[in-house]
Amino acid sequence: MNIKFSGVSKIFEPDIAAVVDVSLNISQGEFVYVIGATGSGKSTLLRMITREILPSRGTITVGDFDLKRIRKSEIPYYRRDVGLVAQDFKLIPSLTVYENIAFVMEIMGMPKKTVSQRAKEVINQVGLWRRRNMKPEQLSGGEQQRVAIARALANSPSLFIADEPTGNLDFNTASDVMKILTDINSAGVTVVMSTHNQIIVNSSRHRVIELYNGRIIRDEEGGSYSS
Amino acid sequence: MTTFKYILRDTMRLLFNHWVLGLLTLITAGVMLWILGITTLFSLNLESLLSRLESELMVQAYLKSDANVEEVFNKIQALDQVSSIRIFSPSDSLNKLQEKMGSQSRVLDMLGDNPIPWNFEIHVHSAELVEALVNNLRAMPEVDDVVYAGLVVKRISALSRISSQVALIMFVLSVIITALVIYNTIHISLYSRRDEIGIMYLVGATRAYIATPFVLEGTLLSFIGAIAASIGIFMAYFPCINLLEANMPFLVRTLITDRNVILRFCLLLAGFGATLGWVCSYLVVARFINLNTKPL
Image 1 (cartoon, helix red, strand yellow):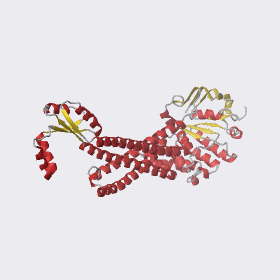
Image 2 (spheres, rainbow over the protein chains, first blue to last red):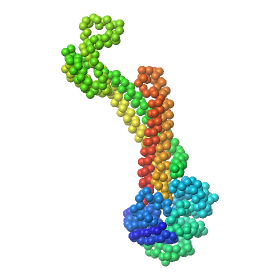
Image 3 (cartoon, rainbow over the protein chains, first blue to last red):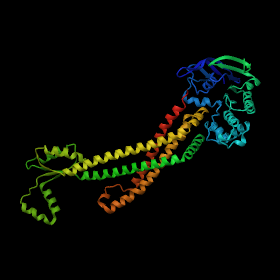
Image 4 (tube, chains in turn yellow, blue):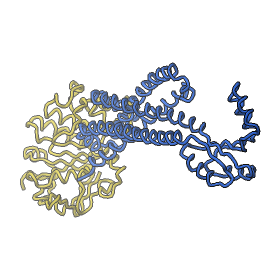
């Protein structure tokens, strides 16, 4: 899935500019880090891709969808092709690990057997099969993040958005998460990941987009955390 | 079909997760729908009783001796208030009176010539129209005298008006209270899961997929409440009718005593309960989901 930002700005009421005049292109299969200090606009940028936030100015196109003009009824179908991993995991607390993952397939009307097979596959992929009947609150931060990844993987999305997926994790767990993301990218899935983690950015070199006060100040292929 | 199965399962989850609240809603909806049903039945029975009394209300108009009977008959028949009219000749009237008086009818022989003039027995559509009819009749120069039960007419007509107003107020109150209880229950259910709703929408659930379990929850609670109310009505109504039959048998032939009619009424109440639940839940869910899934 290609992503195209053209002159995108987001101003929150009363007058807080979170993203200012951003234009960028991300091609299918790329792995992109979005870095910058807290409040630089990373999360706003990512949440505009998932259409949780609408731009005040400019246009965003993801695949065939113009996110400003997309019809309300099309949004769920767009989102099914976007795997999302957030820093706060966004798991449904009343459901078990298995149910959280099965849910994204059930909403598509997949038969129970297919749901069960695919859920087993992705839960195994993130190494949580033995925890499948646990509720999110019974898991550690790293495990919850892996559940979120498994859920994002379940529908085999074309685009993977990860908003600081290693933010709450220790180094080893963060490395495990990074390995999974790299594997996903190797399969041709576009990955856009915001992070503060210098070690990760420096050890696994990909395109780096750096934001400062909502503006892109660096867009470097194979870049490091600091310019 | 598969999606519908998942939705049904989610509905059951909702019902079991909030079972205390659900039970309270069910009881409140049941009680309010029971009151609504009983009030409606009471009002229907009262109406049936009043309409019987009204149908028995009649106005008698006595003509002057020189009046053209056929002409007056046509004039009265043309009045809006008249539902039926019967004409009695002086001899018919005398025979009727003699029949009524039985063995005492010999007293009439003392009168010599038949003093009863041509007269009409007029029935009206409803008690409220009697006064207008009487005024119309009195305004006719051919009419000598008009006889009717004035006070009874006024009381029946007032009772009829008050009973319809009370029934309407009770109906509206019961509907509003039931609607508010269901609305609030579903709102609480939605509010307690607002984060989940946001997540579901974010991972690709359609609004309909998210909304349907909540709408079904409200509809089911209201429907079960209405079924309970219907059973309650069925169980309470016939003992009441039996009691009335024992003490006021003359009343029973005007009341609704057919079990099939009551059964149909209960089914209608259950349908009404389900519809009310569906409408309330739909309104609250649509509003809540619209507000909570809006992009920033």
